Amino acid sequence: MGRGKIEIKKIEKSSSRQVTFSKRRNGLLKKAKELAILCDAEVGLIIFSSTSKLHHFASSSMKSVIERYNKYEEEYHHQLLDPASELKFWKKEVASLRQQQNDLQEYQRQLMGKEKELSGLSFKDLQGLENQLEMSLKRVRMRKGHHIDQENLKVHKKLDLICHENTELQKKVNGNGTEEANESSKSLSHSYGFNNGYDYLQAPVVDLRLSQPQQLPDADTSKSKIR
Image 1 (tube, rainbow, N blue to C red):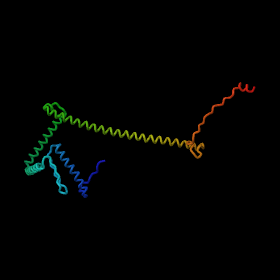
Image 2 (cartoon, one colour):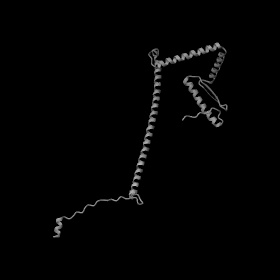
Image 3 (cartoon, one colour):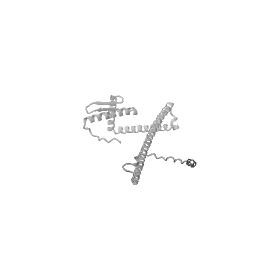
Image 4 (cartoon, rainbow, N blue to C red):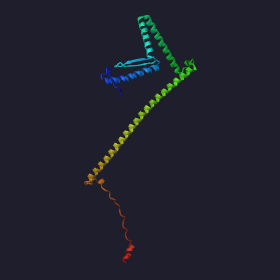
């Protein structure tokens, strides 16, 4: 279940507001550091809390970031006042973006291993490309293994559920069979008058055995005795 949406408005409770500020401040600082490292960007972050406490992060130094920002602001405002300078600025931006696009397309063709694109690369470039491909392949395999583990876990859960349902069904079947057998026995005892205050099934079992027939005296022996 996903987290519910939080209404963006001032938190009135001071303790909750302080906890939220601490959590989100740490997350923002972490993201700023990651952006600077991953993208080789110059990042400057300044935060003042409601109690006027300063929190900041700079990828190089805050002074250099602020100076660069002020310089950019001056150039930008100057370009806005001069249409010719503004046009020149945007042409430069378009050219830079086109160059980045060409570089990315060339790098993509190199990753595809096309001979034409690989012919002009040095040994160091080829080695770097090979390392990049190996890292990408490793990440793909790890991701694939993760998916396989998840699928196996789902299958095991389904099998456990099926086994549990079969066990419960077997218990119900056995229980119903015993109950039906007891009901049949009771019905039989009532029909033939066997149940006289107790269950005949619970009565002791008498060991009935047939005695051996007595051997009759031999006819000749009897005659001799008479004589």
